[in-house]
Length: 126
Image (cartoon, rainbow, N blue to C red; front, side, top):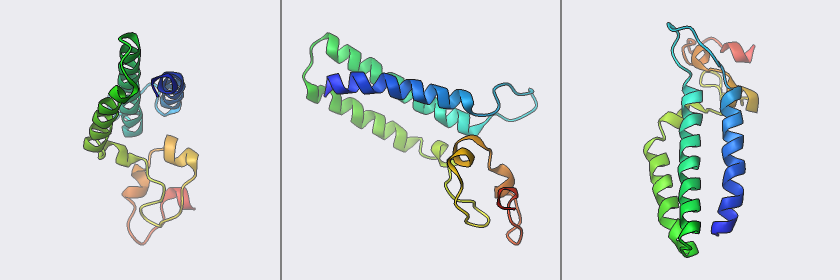
């Protein structure tokens, strides 16, 4: 289990970092708020990096495979505690219920659609 985790986690970490780099804005003026989606993806990168460090440490001390389970439970508990930060990734438009594409879910801010009046459709739905 440690060997599988040590081969999968670096790939996951690189994928999450590339995803975070693709999110807007890469640079922002000081008066604009920061991107909540980018913040959520960087939290996921931090969790994956912490798990990778624990896996490498457990491999170094030649710990049994079950020793990874407490780290996985702790990472799951941290992700559950921060679930409100991850709620920015919505698969449906809040105003009209239309299913959003993967690009819209991962990369586009949905603040404009959240503030749309209930009778109007969001800008993504035109």
